[in-house]
Image 1 (cartoon, rainbow, N blue to C red):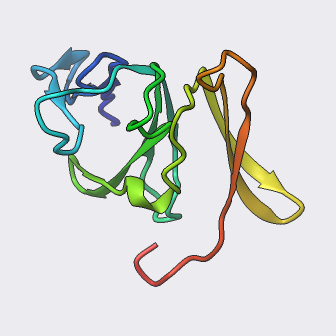
Image 2 (cartoon, helix red, strand yellow):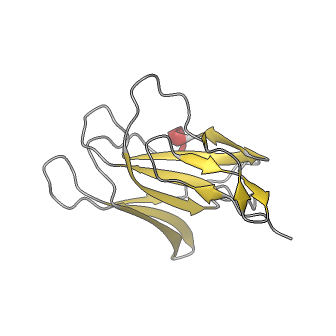
Length: 136
């Protein structure tokens, strides 16, 4: 029997772990340590980024600021634990993300975020998988 978990797209990027029979434990944050200021997220995307069979979480920034990342990456690295691995995506500042997609294009894994830059112009960004090391 599977136990469902619940992912919340709130400022703390919370997850409520399933405790069975439709019940959930209290939500807890999966965000990495970012100091006291928390970036508001507009979108979350769940996919297996590192090909380890576990679902990872990509969050898209919901505000325009010159010191913010447009996307943050949380890789599941163990049972009920996520590690902030945002450095795997280039620091692409001054963009917001409305939606995040991933798939295979021409044999290469691609992650795309669609949103706006700080000038309110459409600003899609594409990230192609460059390599895959032994740790994923």
